Image (cartoon, rainbow, N blue to C red; front, side, top):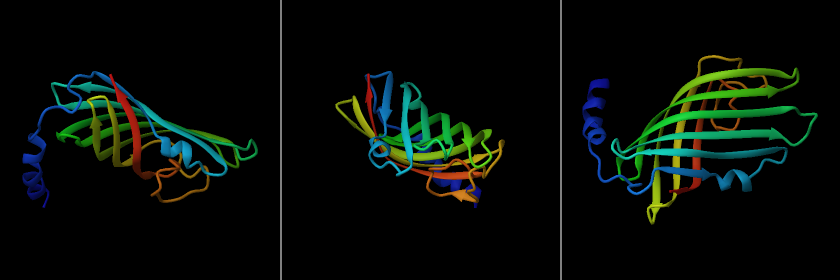
Length: 180
């Protein structure tokens, strides 16, 4: 089955058109959805920096995510830094691999843990005038180090909002960026 999947995906992986950011080297982005759809008791921010590898038709993406409790008594803070390699397959469509570092602090016992994980991503970038872009995508990350469930969650976090579980699945609805 794995060989069949590889045979089917290989032509897609080898195929590429002109790079979507042909005139640009770097980009910055932010998730306005995170800012607008705040949870009632949490402040969140999601953004990132990108370095475009034109010859490889790829991108090195460095996203950051910060979540902080609005209430001192709740004591929860999550900060994640990723390094992600995105290979553009067909214009804006990409497949990626990522390495994540997450720092979680808080919970009932005010614990701190540092987690390291690996993941995979898939998504699409829509580019306008070779500068303004927005993206949608999904990623799955599994943590290999650090303590899980310090905030009381369990299993796989399917919302991508916790990072307190052993594995998380995240959906990226809309990140808006500018390449220059």
